[in-house]
Length: 540
Ligand code: GLU
Image (cartoon, rainbow, N blue to C red):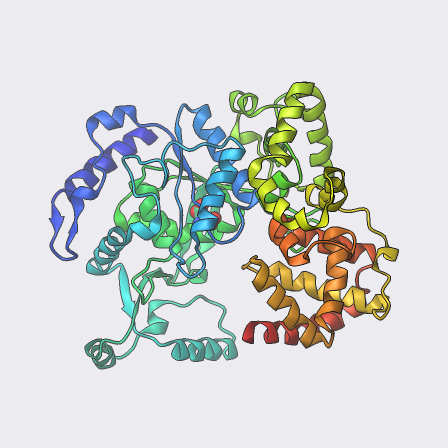
């Protein structure tokens, strides 16, 4: 049934796009044309579409795992697409970290930015012409409109609507300007965005593989921006166009995207395309049931690698997030998961990502799956690899006289949480309350820090000290203890750079808990105070 629909659609699409489009200067031959032959070979295709902003997230690995298991179970393909249309936040390092960490976990893709395939390029920043072409189609067919509203006008409009108690989303009719005003702005070359038209009334109904039919009132759906004033597409347009052109048949993604589905469904129907089947996976949660966030729990895959977990155990644990083997066994491999995979066994209750449980499972993997020789080889790869050693040696060389000094001096760079107590923070002038406050403010500062370069970190701590009224030496004292277990250690910002963001953040948080954390009252007061400090940090 599904195949037939795809077939009709692909024929329509093939004939409609052969040749070039004089309107946009876009050569449609770049589109993949689906032939009869391809139809008979048509396979399940899933994808993961991470944005390369920040550290590779365990949530990305979790979604990648289920996409891969689903595709492999159907003899299909799993591909990797990089959604880097937010050029201000996307970085090449982050993209590389996504590749490295997914590969470390054994989640290999069939096509991707570094694996050319017939549907490339697989990096959205390299697909601008494709998005422009499709935006033009929607404009020409009256399914999208140019919006010349300025940011101030939009704020004003939103305020007005709030005052009037209007709950519904923004529609074309709300944004309309008199025709002569539009002409004036157009003639003056003023910036505009392209928005999609969205029905004002009625109900959007779409299917989710796990949740069945979902209904959303159109009145709650904004006339979404599709193309920004800089000519870059938004997530919604790029995602729909790419999923179609890359022949994605099933979209398994986090439940936070459910609210985007009506817009996507509408876009698919505007283009006359079939929508892939949607499956919104439950979100990973902290043990307190809140959404997994780096403020409460390390979220970077790199952290778990650095913490010394086995990739196979982490994959096993992620597979247990909302899914179980038919015989409910806890320990199983990726291959065993794929053999037994059934998407209907995903349960929707928010799965809790609990590090203690992961450690227990990892212990089983180490004891049962690694011979002594394999343990030695794995440990060597983890701790004594040249790349890591070369980061450590320059830091400790000046502090050792013989090799027996290495372990005591560098041990904290090969450890997880350190055995610190309240006494570890005893200081001649800092009171315990000062220490708690510094650790809490530092923790908040580090949670949002993007640049983990040591000189930058040092400058930020200096500013933090100034804003809090402490000398840099004093501010750094509790950080030293948090990061290295003692203040008599190698440069703390160097160590943080080596340990990376998530391990450093986790240690500062651990230190804060060791000294008792803030009381409820303090937390409220400090949060308010920190807002001013944060302002000083960003304005500097
Ligand atoms: N770029 C989105 C993300 O970062 C992709 C969401 C989707 O799978 O549609 O998660």
